[in-house]
Image 1 (spheres, rainbow, N blue to C red):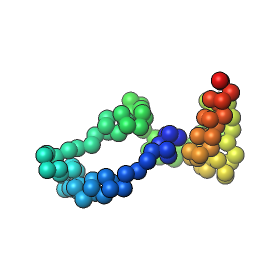
Image 2: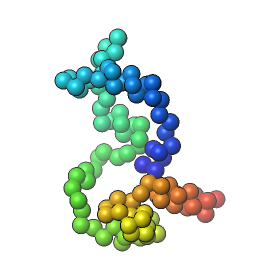
Image 3: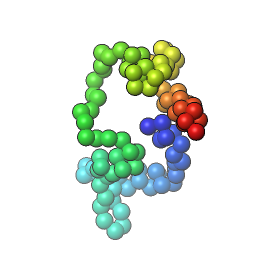
Image 4: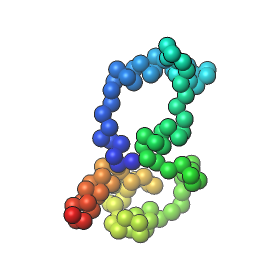
Amino acid sequence: MAKLRHLKVDHALVTTFVERWRLQTRTFHFPTRECIISLEDVTLQTDLRIDRLPVIAPTKFDWEDICDTYLGIVPVKGESLVGSMVKLKWLSDQSRIWSNKNK
């Protein structure tokens, strides 16, 4: 997810998609045919996994402990860690630090 913030947005393309979206059928209508964007399409673009249970409600985990276990570092509560959300900028910065250490 940290890589998503580096995507360049083509505003003209987004505007075109918005104009061609049909809410009733949940499809894009193009001159050649209709197009549906599936969850699989999104996973191919974002490289996010969809083969596990979704997180759809607040969790009661100790996120500092989870970050320490899986990342080896604990984000600052209230700054980089807000509730159960780890800020992407912090995660991206840590990723850059980790990759520089492994060079």
